[in-house]
Image (cartoon, rainbow, N blue to C red; front, side, top):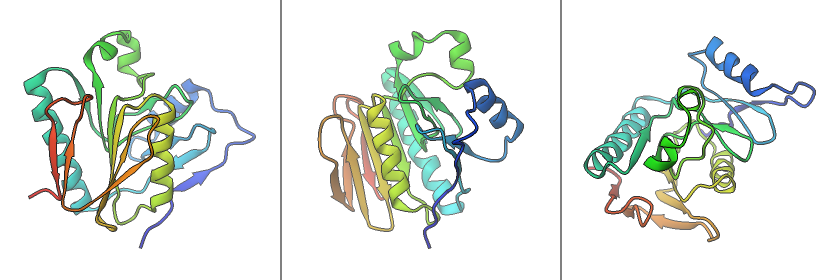
Length: 191
């Protein structure tokens, strides 16, 4: 059964970036995000199967990145302060090296004020699809260059690119990193 994440409207409470950061620090075991509209999103933890798949995705991305040295790979616990206003944690993310190096040490240590160039969102059994699709649109509006929303329940991968319609690819899928991640290929489902 798919569930919507718990969303708390903060219409009358405008958390500053520092207050949101401190709220996350004070609740380290509760995955929180903040939408571009300022709503507080309490994420559900994932089960073992989804956690294993997420780890495999990060591993494949990391192995490619170690060979190319083109950027930095981030886990689902990394919160990005998106230029569009949200604070989001993709399941896997990659930022091109020169963009990462352009951040100050303080910006890198906190919630980096940058949109990843590439993200993967993996729909778990507890995730409803519409909030994840909205999140992918939020990434695009903030400068995302390539994004994959892997949906095991529908046996599809949604591919997001700027200024193009979302492309839906059925399983089994061979996903290419295109110009963003040159030479990166992912076969899904994983063997």
